[in-house]
Image 1 (cartoon, helix red, strand yellow):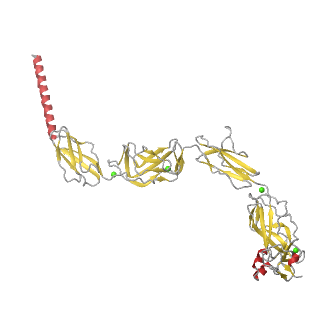
Image 2 (cartoon, helix red, strand yellow; image 1 turned 60 degrees about the vertical axis):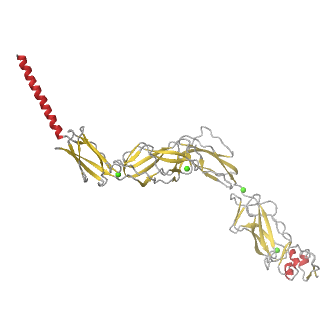
Image 3 (cartoon, rainbow, N blue to C red; image 1 turned 120 degrees about the vertical axis):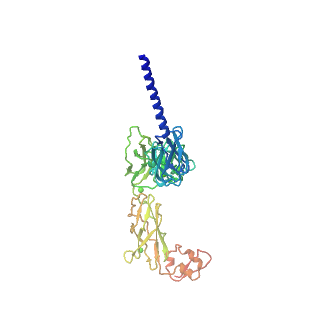
Length: 504
Ligand SMILES: [Ca+2]
Ligand SMILES: [Ca+2]
Ligand SMILES: [Ca+2]
Ligand SMILES: [Ca+2]
């Protein structure tokens, strides 16, 4: 009996608990809450005209009312299977900015704030490209774009570079570098061995997404139209070859001294060099490299050679550059032969007295050096005149000329000095060593006469005896021509002046 009584009360208590439980569930189903809005997306350019959102609820068939701030067609949906969803709303007329969404079921309400952003990020005109330089294997070329607003990058968008000489380029990719969100997007390209470009690297006009994306925080794809980079990156080169010595060349001019300077096709380099008289040179492995970039040969005669080798920071060696120079520190000397003087003759007004001076090597003339003549009676009436430099610079023989002037008279033979008057000019060899000017070796000058007071063959010609003109410079004898009243025996040929007969 006791046991029956105990079982009875336990049965009553269990039934009450079941009834209570059923009663509570029924009450909450009717109310439909609590309600939530689950992770609403931003409203952006692509979803604004067909926007969907929703959340969780409890009451099946309960009426869930929603309200979007600024939207005029707010309505309600039913809670089904503990969820509610609003689809296909055209929110394109809402202003960009923060938007509040509210949802309610019976006395339960909830809200969420989202953003409407329909402006796509754009690429601005601000950018940076690699600094002007020559890049080696392992060097990194950085490119940076600036967007109009912060962007989120996924995957590995890339810029396409054309590397190589024009006409034989190959594509290379500067790939997006992970970076904190912001308006800057950086791309990097690491130079690989074997690549070279000595006529500017080029960048193609468009970025490749390569399966990635560039969007703002609200899901708007960035507008990736033309990049702001110049197509060719001026003075941006790639050189993965071994270094080479630059700045050297053979000298074709003779010099007294020579100072060479050199550089390297890339920086930094160190160098070793030697100057000798051999056209080729091999360095020993023990010859050290130094940062020195100049060497000099300050004396000597003959051909000297500079040999330079460079080493870059990766211990790659250049080939040996060898250049030469011809040094001359020996002054010219005068030929021991007498100078060449005008032929013995009588010279008239307008006639030329031509001289030649010869050195043992080629000389260079600047200005108008001259030979000093004395025209007139020796020791009394003689006056100084000059046979001036005429031609011959660059050769070993210089020509000088005096043109007989009206009034010149010298009946006892020409005289001249044994020193060349530079008259502010210069005579040197090709390297600048001054040529000697004094101690000219003179031949005998006493057969050279000047007579401008008497009729000469030119004047005869003016009188109509044309053919005689050709013999103006004929070596007429002094005795034959100083006489008055010369007669012309015939006009048959140009030797007529030689045959001219003068009256006693
Ligand atoms: Ca935006
Ligand atoms: Ca190129
Ligand atoms: Ca010389
Ligand atoms: Ca004289």
